[in-house]
Image (cartoon, rainbow, N blue to C red; front, side, top):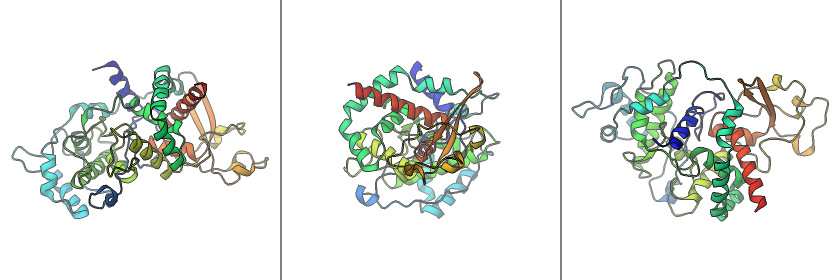
Length: 385
C-alpha cells in the first residue's frame, strides 16, 4: 500500500465517524475516528430522476448477532437479521425486499474496514500540534494553490452563490482527499453492510445503527438511479468523492453546481464546491463572519468551553464588562480549546458559527481548526502571486 494512502487512512481514523459531511451533533472527539460524510444529490426534478424524499432514520436491525457474516446466506436468501432490516426498509421507503436482497448478494464481509474501525487498544493522547502538522504542510499548500488556480472561476462562482470563501472549500478538499488524489478504493456497499450489521465494537451499538442508515440511503440512491451501489467506491467508512460525502449527505446536501442535470462528486469541481458550500451553509456558516475572531481571550477561557458543536455564548458571556462591537452584538460565539497533551499545553480561540459549521463536516475541533489554518495559508499564497 502506498505510504500516502496509509497516512491518509491513519488521519481519517484520527477523526472518524462524525463528519466529513455527516449530519450529527455529538461532541467532538479529537483523538478518535471521524468519518467523512454526506452530500445531497441534485433535486430529482432537475436531475431527471424520480423525486427524492428525505426520510427519518430507519432504526431497525442490530450489529451484534451477525458478527463477521455477510447478510446473504449461501442459498441467496437474507439472514434473519438482514431480512428484518430489509422489511423495515420496504415499509418506510417502498424499496422491495427483493431489490435489497439482490444488492446485498454483492456485499461481502470486509474485514479490512472492520479492522480499521475497531476501537484502539488504549487511549490516544490528544495532540493539536501533531494533528495540525499532518494537514497544514508544504505539499497540501503547494498542491492547494495549484488546484485553486486551475479552478479559480468555478470556486469563485460557488463562493459568490453560497457565501463560503473559496479558500475554505479548497482546504476541505485538501484535507479530505489531497485534492482528489485519494478518494478511497473500498466498495461502499460492502463497507456499509459490514459496519452496519457487524460493527466491531459491541459497546457502540449506535455506530452500527448509523451505518445501517447510511446503507439504507445508499440503496435508496441506487433505486433512484443516482448512483450504482454495487460499484461505487469510497473510504473504509463509506465516504465518497473529493468531498468524502456519505450517502446521507449526498442525499441531503449535494448540489448540481454545473447545472448538467446530475451530480458527480468525483469528476465535477463545480458539483464538489457547491456541495461543500451548501453543507456548511446548511450547518450554520455565517456569511461574512470568519471562523475565528481576532480579539483578546476572555479571562479564564477554560471555564467557557462547552465542548459542543454549536456556538451557544454571546459577547456578554465572554466579556461582561465590555460593550460589544456593533457587528458582534447578536453573533453567537464559543470558546474552542485545542489541547496538546504530550506538550502539556492548551490553545484557546474565540469561534463563530462559521467555525462550528465545519465541525459538523467532521466532528472535531482539531479538524475544523486545521481546515481554517490551511485556508489561511492558501489565501496568503494566492495573494503573493
